[in-house]
Image 1: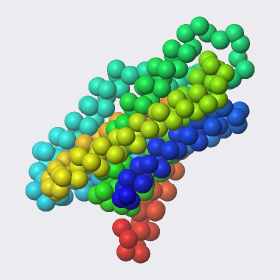
Image 2 (image 1 turned 135 degrees about the vertical axis):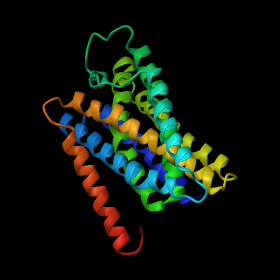
Image 3 (image 1 turned 90 degrees about the vertical axis):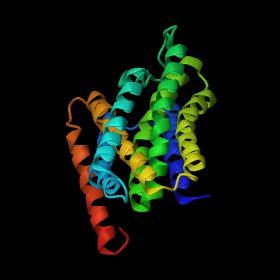
Image 4 (image 1 turned 30 degrees about the horizontal axis):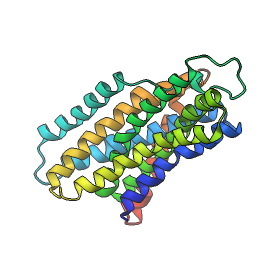
Length: 257
């Protein structure tokens, strides 16, 4: 099994951490959750704009028109898909002991699972493609994806546990949302194995950069602010950018970047 695929598997599996926290009552504080979302957004933004997009534009045979065009395709594609999906909100993290339960909570929980699963699918592709092109950047993207998968696991398991009273069902459905990410990575591994053209890989990477930027700006940062309105999510974003930037400088200084 390839390293990029392993990274994708681990990033998707992080959803189970949030799922378990959602059923054992040890939910992290809103401040920690919000900071982790901002931190993940910072990592994604820096890697997408400072590493992935420039690398795609510099690839052999890649034209600026195609490179920037694919970046815009990634942006618009994400926003188009995002508008059709249900979203996770902090109020969806329903405590298991809340009674009486709303009659439509089970339906809401299933729709939430579907929405997060469809969001996770392109993230799996993004993690695999990035790691295939640059392993160090792949580690960064996998780490950022894993970070924000934890509150996503919480968002799924909480309402399902409240609706069914079953910890197993809550963890199962949260796991389904994480498996969607793994499925995206596996399909990318199967399909892209035959697409070895540098231009094709660069075009995909530019589109993935657009998806990551849109995800950070439209989903992670607003959700961080909604979870913890009293703190600025920019602190987490700047910390994520700083840590990722310093790590890339360190890797380059020792000849690994």
